[in-house]
Length: 347
Image (tube, rainbow, N blue to C red; front, side, top):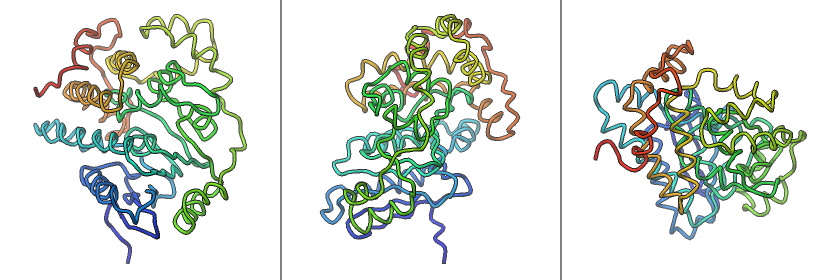
């Protein structure tokens, strides 16, 4: 009989296995799923039988396509904003718990990982990707802002390139650029590549993490496309405002074209909010401090009409015709966004 629970947790040999099991919704995270994951991690934290935790998906297409923002939109529209506050606060607490977990957390990202899906993978000690993996942060198009600790983690990630890049993180987080396996390894958002995700997962369970990595880790067949663009990205995205980034992109026609295409449907307030968030999180001393900022700013953002409108256009009606207010970057209230980083609207 097929298990219909959205999260299936079990201890197999010495591995705590968390299977994301909402395939029809591409494993988008509901409050129930977040609670179930947190419960399992708490139970296994001090259980000597569990040596490592393995996150997998029952979907052949997706690891996790993000938090269930349609649920959040309905909650806001129905006047249940306190429930939406609790949903995001609990999700972000889980992100921090994963980052600080005392045992290896292995996320097998064998498919799509967007938004909240990165929150339950990118903070783990081992982020394992395959040829099916792609990762992006698409919040700009739904009137929201970069979240789940990614503005913090991406700015500090060090991959095969050998150094972190705040500018690369800003580019990726704000444009929604899709990173595939080679880019993820090069940037440091992924730690390992395997050719066969199922075989790797079985090996972790049967033989342990070290043996599984030794037997199955390889390299992707392609080079990282971002390596060709990094000099232009680091120059253009070193600027402090989106208007200045746009001006700097005039020197780099190829990158300019990509950025314009990727941000064509973006919410102006979301772009400005993300610029402020990335700058603020450069100064954060911990993932928890960063997540607190995101809790505050996120709550401000989903109380605005742009969030409901963006989710409608992208995920409900799928018309991609959101009418954001204000429609121009110059009209965005930057001071309000800076204040929102430090004060939750419910307080």
